[in-house]
Image 1 (tube, rainbow, N blue to C red):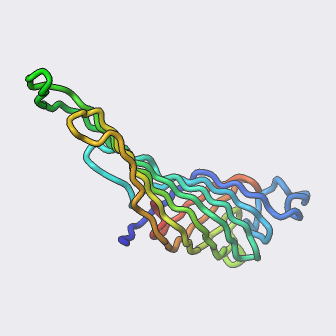
Image 2: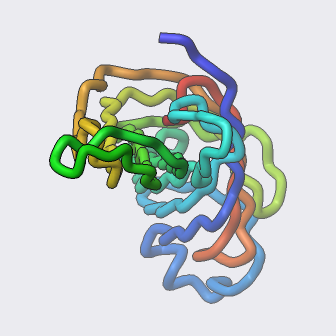
Image 3: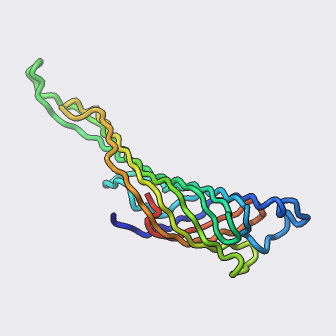
Length: 204
């Protein structure tokens, strides 16, 4: 499988720190250590580059969307699941002629085609966090790996009645995918922040 570079840009990261952090008097102050055992992070991101999609001149490609949930199981390690998705749509319109045997005439008619292709990946990922070693206020740097399963679906529709398929669906793609990534998360509060990631085999 050919692998491309993916830049996954931040949208929002929401976290819940361990109970001792939530109950401390400094709950709403800036955080010195932005990663600790027991915290739970929910991330929503938009990718800038997708490497799996159908493209034809005039196609519309949606930004890749990814969602992940991660739990800090030690002071440095987190594990969780993720789901990634991208969709491309190609539309075409034109005219064609065919011979109608009932009327014994040539018919001039228009048609509209639409092809929709959806790709996705779901699986698990884990990361090693550097907050104990690189202590920058509110910043959590990390690197990790992922392993997942890819899937795809295509749907084609046309109103052309001249012997063309109308409609059909197929799901002929899927398999194991893996990759590595590095990233960083910056927290504005103990519950809301932003993140960005750079890696291979993480697009869909």
